[in-house]
Figure 1: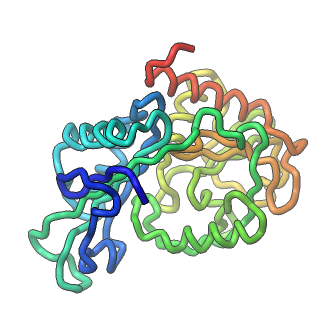
Figure 2: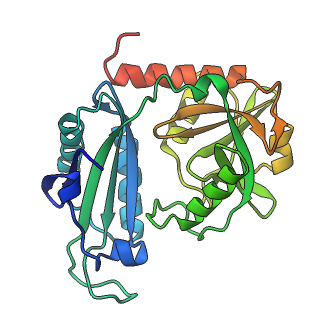
Length: 286
């Protein structure tokens, strides 16, 4: 690991940043995290990210480690110190260091860590080729709306999908697709985008929120409803979204081509409009 990371008010070399073995994030997964994309040295979608991060903190009775403005300044500083023109910033807050006990400790300072990474997000080659998805069982806890650092269920599902030769896994529970292991899930039928409605069963994806806003603005029909694996296999198109992939087309699910096995026109339109919006925020001339 290299680069500069943030740890509890300090900017340190990655190999110098240390957290106690008694940190509750390490012992219990007692914390929350976020990832924000960076384009042209600019952190995108700040308000939606702050809103979701604040909600996750609140749901676990965790306090902000600093003011929201200070938090944004910290992220900007990491982008600058790591010279991230394009990529993202990962950050997490845990309940901090305390003797091992299942109940919450009192008056314990949180542990706040963050680091940046470089990644090509605008010209992602998968946007041209598309990706493969495999169905996997959803074995996660019941509060998936909280962006918890306890991600073992997602890791197991992602590994299962990978062993099936897929880029991503679409998790299935009670006969319906919930979401991807690290992304939001969408299918398209008769030019209508279908995605699962928000609840405790899925994470309220920021890209999902923004894509729905874009679709509504451009009179693209959206249905927020449950859909089955069979509906996904029979769809005209399918795609996914996440912080640092933006929007990617799905061309195959469980070995079956979706549509003609190529990125579809609805996906192309949604990705184009989202990227145009992102570039505008980043101050890049179109």
